[in-house]
Every structure is written in C-alpha cells, then in structure tokens.
Image (cartoon, rainbow, N blue to C red):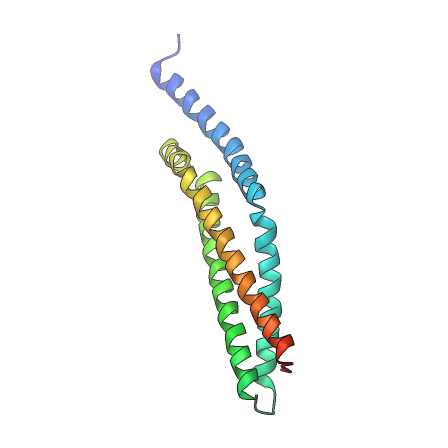
Length: 152
C-alpha cells in the first residue's frame, strides 16, 4: 500500500507536468486570438526602421529645417514609446516563461498563474490597443511627411 507522501508526490508531479504542457498552449492561443504576436513582430521591424531614419537625420551635416526637426522629434517620440512597449511586453513574457518553464514552477505558482490568467489576457488586449495607437501616430507622421513634402 502506498503511503500518503508517495501519493501526494505523484499527484504533484502529474500536476506540474500537465501545467507545463497546457499553459504554453493557452498562452499561444490567446496571443494568436488577438494577433498580438504578429503585431509585435511588425512593430519591432517598424521601430528598427524608424531608429535608422532618426539616426540618419541626426548625423546629417546640414541643419534641419524647423518642419523637418519637428517631424523627426515626433517620429523619435513614437519610436521611444514603441520601444518601451516592446521592452515591457518582453519582460512580462520572460517572467511568465520563468514560471511555466521551471525556474519558479511549483503548484502554488501554477495556481497563482492560472487564477491571474484573465489579467494576462487583459494585459495582452491593452498591449494590442497601444500598438494600434502607435500605428495611428506613425500614420499621422507619414501623412505629414507627404503633405508637407518633408525631406530628411
């Protein structure tokens, strides 16, 4: 006959294995549901392109006109906001991965993560909204560049 400790250890081990298998699937499903993964990748590429444009503008030998300087400052502000968003999302993802993949994985953390899962979904939803805001600001910058024929 098995003692209680052996039964508890077997149940704990089974719960941990199940949690490790199920949680990443739930996470990826939610991100795919919102299209967040693709949007974050697109934002990353856009931010890298903007960073190159801003650096080129700063390195130009001739001084920028007031219009051009204003446009570069707006673009730089959007770039910094996008970079901050990407960084905070990455940090949150790393913390979640550490809990799920074993660094802090135990039954208590698994239970806390499962209970707080709606918060993580809400945070992803907010992140998607922030990406939309950044995209709208980038569209406004592009429109200004075309409208005023800015050459940086």
